[in-house]
Image (cartoon, rainbow, N blue to C red; front, side, top):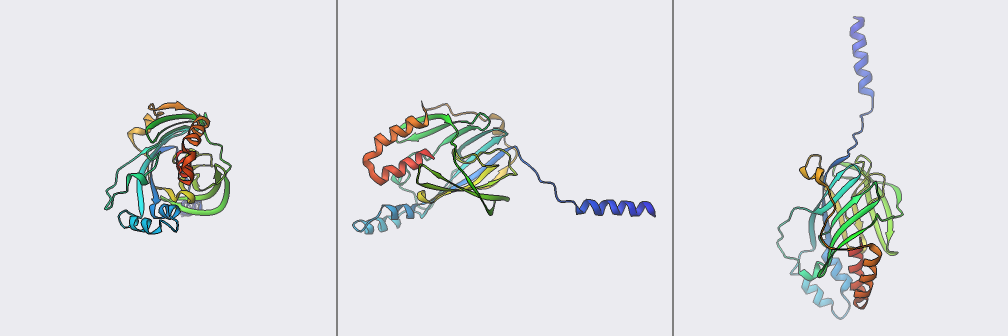
Length: 251
């Protein structure tokens, strides 16, 4: 009888222990990138052409949605275009803009990245140090793809405000595009000035490509400073359109 009470006591003690957290070091995350095209049109409209932009809305979807995959294995990540989606209304080519199908390799340990971006008629292979963003972590939380995430904010290029959501249950300190530097994986990004968000939809822990993470090879090699100088020279006559293109390219 004494043995019986000891066994019961053991299991009751075990049940009272907090659940052990699982920390993930490798896998594949699908990201859904969504851009509000109507909001972009409103940015471009003024009193003289408002009716023109209102007419455009009738022939295009309000939201443009694309998918990307982020493969990660400890200190290395690879972000690239994912599955295609069928749309009822086609998005006009001129609404797409540059750098829509980026491939980004990050070595988080070496703090280096290599990014393949198509900018109009040119393809660049940008090789440089990881962005040193000054993140401010808040107490706000949000659940994304089943993970409890904490909110953080930063400012890019002096005027582009960024909201991010990260989880420390996924160990690598990476994220979509070239975002990194938080205490865990970034599963959500929102950039109000670009009317664009990136949110994880699911995590897959087994995929053949996880073991084949490597930098992109195509494109003219260039660093961040040289690319920014090239863009400022090429797009300075484009006004607010050129500035928005630069923001899109440099994220």
